[in-house]
Length: 108
Image (tube, rainbow, N blue to C red; front, side, top):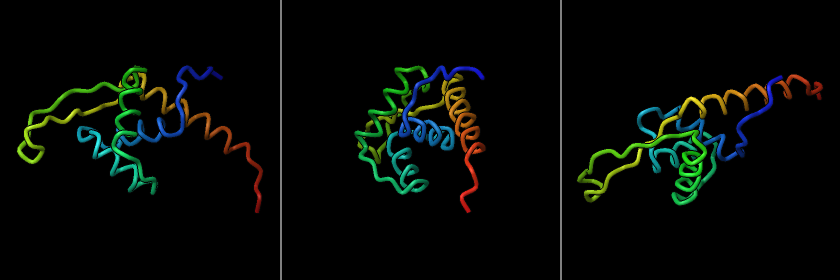
């Protein structure tokens, strides 16, 4: 088996997956809301931004800044998307987790 090349924590994994799920609509608030919807976890926007920026620094995400909008008081949104390395990282984690789950005995 190939060694894991990407060292990511559980919250980083969840946020990478959420960015993938949201596609072109992945920005701070939408990621925060989707994490709550899918996992029940309530995160602060600063925690979400911290993880998004850390994942971008690791090369697992890239970002771009959208245009200013009236509803945001003229501020612009930073949108995120998975890089090829980000896709590889979540694929590796999925493979490792699946392998381990398949090794688990039946407890019933």
